[in-house]
Image (cartoon, rainbow over all chains, first blue to last red; front, top):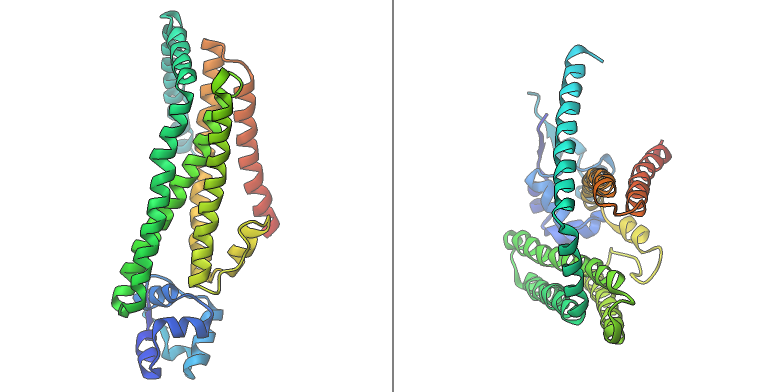
Length: 67
Length: 242
């Protein structure tokens, strides 16, 4: 089940780079890059942290497309 | 167990037995042909050139490891002026250099011990120089590993752990983020699979060598012990998680 993420879009709205977002979320810049590319699916803890940083609901960052 | 599995297992047993028989017969023929003298010749050659051998492994492994570490640092410096699109490629390249450096360092450490351990007390007048080369090599290996870890920690304040401490692996792993930890766990599991298979091969080979070339029971014992530790540790940590 493919996971669609709008992380890059939300990050652009907030106007921060990957490294700064990583620092806020407590992960490395590489992990943020992996998530944006769809090469890594974050845990629920990280997803909730990201939602809190962006001030949006989880569904506005991650959703999935039924096959 | 269904019929298909039974047939598959039977075929694998027959193939394994055939391969084992071929290897055993080959070893017997090798033994009869006087191959033992070749082994003695090789050992004599190694003993007579112990210092050159030590220098060879330093030049072919330790120095390239140091070179790769320096190259990794030079590549990493480029991150300061890189765009986000370029950062992934730069970090991947730097990481490749550091990983290769650590690998060569590890191989050198193993061979350093192997050369020292097999030639110890047999190299006569050369022993003091061999001991000195072994000590220098051991210190160099540790220093390079510590330097690599310190460099990584300097560039990423999240990474914790004192590389000279017994708790380093635990502290360092704990400081990694979830994606980095997953990478370590995947590598660890794949390593376990390879090590288990390798240990099993060593057990079989040492038994065959003992039977045909009379190499002694100790290699068999050590190989079995290694396989036992490999299997037991995986089971123990698996059950601990439950």
